[in-house]
Image 1 (cartoon, rainbow, N blue to C red):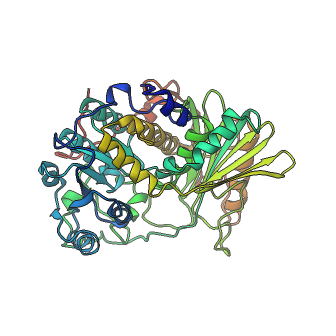
Image 2 (cartoon, rainbow, N blue to C red):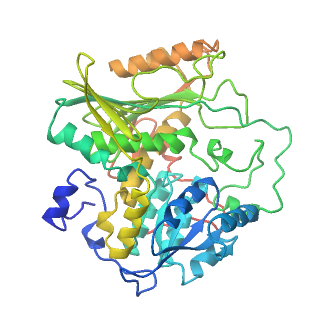
Image 3 (cartoon, rainbow, N blue to C red):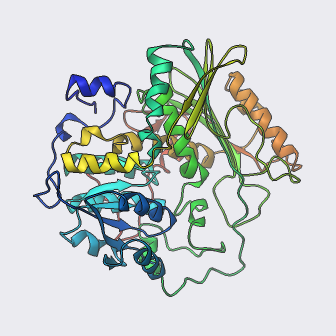
Length: 487
């Protein structure tokens, strides 16, 4: 879908914002209660009351005319804590369906585990409520598309929580790179997510669920499998049943900056992908890779991504030294490079001289204010992270995870299928870091997939290797928590 230019003034101010944002049919939308006016109180319900939800509550609580009216979480202890801290008079539910039935709730904030994001959002929009949903939008590519379809069909406002989209710095960067062409043409790009984490443990017996948590509701669409990690909360990120690994946790932010600032959102999905990595050193219950390296062919600017949760060596507490910011991106241009990360960016010429600095506000509280403004005006076209924008960025993460999961043993021959200096350099960096742990790239513990081809229009894999890859585009849902197909 393409965005309509609702006014020349608005377009001039936002000319570098996504070309895949809300369609023109969403310019004026119905309200949740059918009578919401610009000055009405907006009543928010929170689906999940964990740490990230608390950060959202802090932001929304500062806004005039916004009330935290509902709290929902399968964990009663988290509801009690959120009520004491943010909203003592809020209604509470363990089951989100009770909240969605409440006509006094205008919009919901979904900050649950990844596997709940799409179903909770779709059910909310079917109930006539607008949605602010945390990143990544989807746990699988298919359900992300259904969420976009739901927003369009039910004419709801749906903002994705890639908050850096609302940092004014991003518009300055896009003007610098694309309008002023201050560094010339962009030749290639690199994305980094290097952040040290630790083991999540490996139990010999399944984790006992706290009786204060309704485990059936916590699982929702996920399969009922025994958990062998030490903690239920947060560490679900590293289990394919409920999470998307570091790629979906932090990778989505840096990939979103790439799509926004380097590609101006004109590239929805890559056309080819090659990915590899491993979960090594920790010997824990996690499944997702703690070392991940990916090549994205976009048909224009090639992109590589490096990710690691390991220190640079067993004797260090620091992440490996890599080109550019540890969590950010580099745009390599004919006249220099731009290194961007959350809240700041720096441009260098080809001699390494700093020629421009950018400073931002991390997108807080601007992103939350942008969502509320869209609700008050019933104008989805002003969203900085419309659901379809978030769907495509989450898609890069989903595809990167699939590229890893269908991989087999790493070999230099397979890696050499990509002839790109940035890719070669990334592989050498990974080889050096893993070597410090006495792990060789060709030891059998490191995986590398085949080069996979993607049809961005159908959001499916085609050609060699597509059968195994396409099988991971949609998960098996646990009844009755089934994501519906929205047409």
